[in-house]
Structure formats: structure tokens, C-alpha cells
Length: 302
Image 1 (tube, one colour):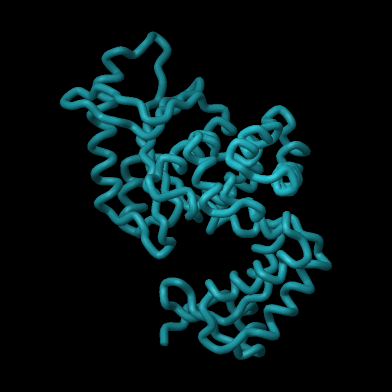
Image 2 (image 1 turned 45 degrees about the horizontal axis):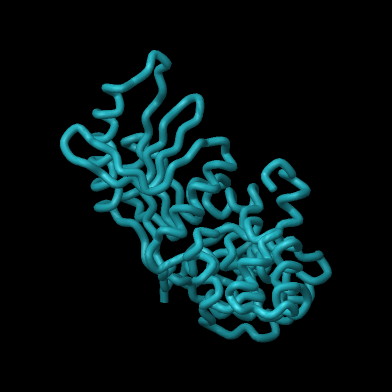
């Protein structure tokens, strides 16, 4: 058994409960009620609902329980109280559903970069100094050019090891060399980037930092990670919707629609898919509810 050390005070409190849970990595830690509470708060559920969900989950805990099972339980109970909150809570699995080609993930990341005031192009063919490259995302603002590659995984246990940034950085240097030949009088910074929906290995992160790469994963950088950026922007993918079946989500993604907000006033698309008027109304209601935070915090983004 591998037991990961936690902060002393928190560990002492959790030890009293005597419940060890198993992380995806295989490490075992004491169940942390506060951590579960924080994850539920990201769903924007009421505090009373969060408290009730936690109490129900705690009653079903058992030693060595996988964190994935705890998430499934919390989601199941939360859904009974608030379908909209449950849609927000399933964000991580919703991102995993953006496969298998990875292209919807590239479009989704481009939308997040737009939120940060970048102009973006997806799937551009760019001539490098030596060879031609297809770049997932070219992004530009007044200060820099971002040349970004996206690494999508449909299994959250997979991660990007050192080989990925090594390969991507070599492509970036070839493209950068050619782009600098066309540099305008306004000097901009060129940055190579790697975005993944899972995680980086420690070596991959060390190399990325050393080479000043733009590195973004589900939980990196701290407080500026992919999950933080999604929370900040309110840009949830259509795969978050509980009212859509998987094959319907796949159809919508194939039409180039990746954001929930892009389904607002697009009932015709749903009708053309053979979805009934009753279900269309439920889908639209869920979309509007999920997008409420975006409308409140960033009305210009709607």
C-alpha cells in the first residue's frame, strides 16, 4: 500500500474517519471531505445541496474505494438535486468525450484561447524552414504568437511524457525559423505550446519550463490550468449536456459545434437530427441554464 502524505492538520482530521481511498495513480490517501466539497462547488450547486450530497457519499464509503467511484456517486446524487449542476460537475469526463479524433478538442482549446483575447486558426498548414507542418492551433495577440499542439487522450490515466514536448519543440523551432523571415517591424515573441486534457510527466514539465514552452494540462499550471480556464470562461463543451445521447453529441461535434453556447437559438439543427420538440425544449433549457454563469460574468462572450 502506498500512502501519500498530506498536510498534517488535514491528515489528522481525515485519519479519524479511518477511510483510505485509492487514486487513479494507485496511491492511497485518506478521504478528504473538503476536497470533495471544493469539486462540488465548481458545479455552482447550492451549499445545502453540496452538504446533502457529501453526507450521502460518506455513508457509502469503504476502504480502498477508487476516487472514480466516489466521483460517480457524487455525480449520481447531485443529478437528483440539480441536473444543471451535475452537467457542470461532469466537466472532466465531458472533455474525455471530445474524441476520438482529437479535432473537437483542438477547436475547444482554440475557443478558450479566444476567451483570453487571442486570434486563432485551427488546423493550419505552415511552411517551416525545413519541411511543411500541420499545426493544431496558431494563436496571436498583440504581444506574441502561440504555435500550439494539442494532445488529446480519451483515457484520463494516460499522460504526456518527455517524448511529446521534445517532438513538439523541434517542430516549433522549424516553424519559428520560417515565420521570423516574414517578421514585421513590430517584434513579437514566438512561443511553442502543448495542451493536453490529462497530465504531464515530471520530465515533460521540466523540459517545457526549461524551453519556455506554453504548457497547459488539466491541473497545470496551478490556478491557471485547463479546468481553471474553463471555470473562468464558462465555456462548457456540448458533451457536458445530460439531455443529449452520445450519438447525438457525436453528430453535433461533426458539424463543428463544440460549445454549449453555440446551441443557443440553433433548435433547427436539433430538429434536423430527428429530435422531438419535447426533447429539444429540454435540451435548450439545459443549455441556457449551463450558460447562465457565462452570461452573467462575460455577456460579451455570448
